[in-house]
Image 1 (cartoon, rainbow, N blue to C red):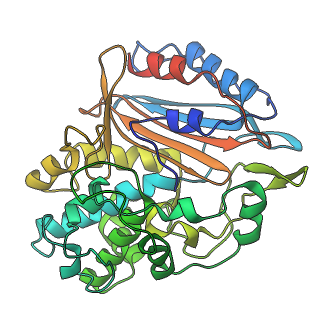
Image 2 (image 1 turned 90 degrees about the vertical axis):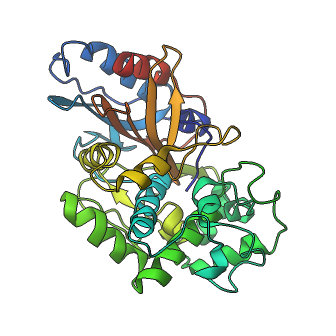
Length: 369
């Protein structure tokens, strides 16, 4: 649900995780391709658990070999390690799935990227005749970010954690405010854009957007551990727990009604499934060539954000593409080199108290540089 410009577990670091340092669980010291030092990777994860995360699980894949690593604990009150096959809330990585479906519809001639949203969703947006589908996918629509109107402090979260929201209610929160800027003139990350995108998929396909995602992405790729939970509050299968502190008490926030995020951030997945998705998407196996080019096309002011995916150059000069995500209790990352030869997927669970997290830069440098 939450997102940041650029890549990032800067999105994770920016979420200021801190918590109980868990017991590191070391994997065999074998690298992915004779290049990545797994001891360095493990040291970075241990630093994340020591300084901030309740737990972290990671998967690295070079297309030929892969390895997993983890650190911290699955629960604040138990020494049980984080499961390396655990499911987690992927937050804004949901946007990449939704954008993929929209671009598939574009390739089939059912949607035009530069058509106004009002063509497909008449009456939804006061400025729907001036906001295009492309601008929605690229966060250049100017739509106010509805999550900025939600009470996302710990006490506020507890008040609505089980509330069911409709997409129309989420959009209404945004359209009650004026546009942040004239459509197409600036870039600003807004979850409202992808609520609109999910509603567009439903209108064009005549099916709930989760059905379209399932039929077009999850089933063809065999992503059996990935789901669109709707109003389901639990995380199915093995998983680590995320926490907040509210009223001076530690609160397990793992149970959460993700309808507050809808198509902007509700999905659940695993590192293995996200790795397979990133590989297929960036390898051109989900989109036609014209739409594949649109996927990563950016504007000078879009901060490297394309259509549901971001590109960023690391200090070492390597470019990586993907998306990060955050939702109460969880932060996530899905990143790959453009040729998919090196990929990283990761989940971080929140400890009860906020604070800085260390180890991210060392991790990214070792895996990609």
